[in-house]
Image (tube, rainbow, N blue to C red; front, top):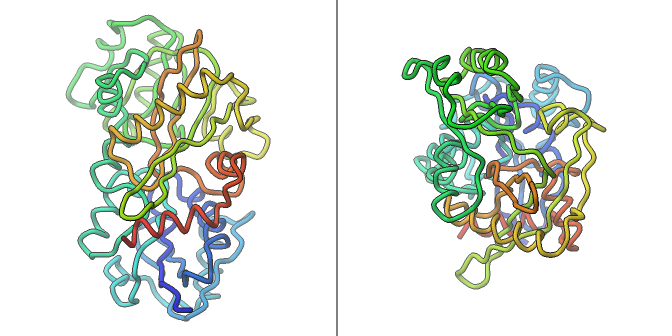
Length: 349
């Protein structure tokens, strides 16, 4: 059987670099080898590409390794003497790229646009949907227009508004939740009960980011639910999975709760009742469609007094063996090997 040659892009320059390495290790070991020849392509934190040349590249287990330790082992095992620019992908005859990247430059449309210029098809959403989903302010505006409940919010842009004056005159009451407008994976996010606490968080985010989203804090049950697409003929048919309830051990589902073993309890399917489950499935499909997502997505919600409030949509959600979409697929009897084949089939079409 002739295998289709696929580049698995992972690592990247975002703050979720190490999470991408872990996700992609699972992807590499799960993709159907009868159909696809997989070449893991490591993008280091400076944006350089490390591309194996042999037919049977090796993806070492990243467990317990720092990024530098992993790169050293990866390059040695695959006999890579030097890094290249992304244009080096053109020298290898890849039919498509599987995006194992997360956050920032991996998820906001930049790598998608770069691959489009190189004419290399890729899994997941395109430039526009990726950029819109990453921009939580503009995504919230879209969600509101189609009738999905969204907690009140404001967007602050560094150098454009008086942040302190805005925080002191918010159109909604404290407590609030603060996060980078263009961030991912709950990095630099937090709750503020007073304007003073809010400004500490805003100033912290403004050190590395240009925009901050301040949102009325909604208390309730945190859930997340994925969408997958499957080809039927020439059509892509999206369908919702089952929700997962997230019970973080910390105050909220932050970076540590997401990626530290035992940091949160995750219950799939979420015990929220049939009516709420159907509403979540309806809303996550609406979010997927209004943003223009492709292949798959995952949307996070807070359920308060029986109302699901949307938090955000992820266009490249985590794909470790214990991540939320693999949990939800398993609950429906769907193998991730099959899911990855669906994603690549959509990309190649």
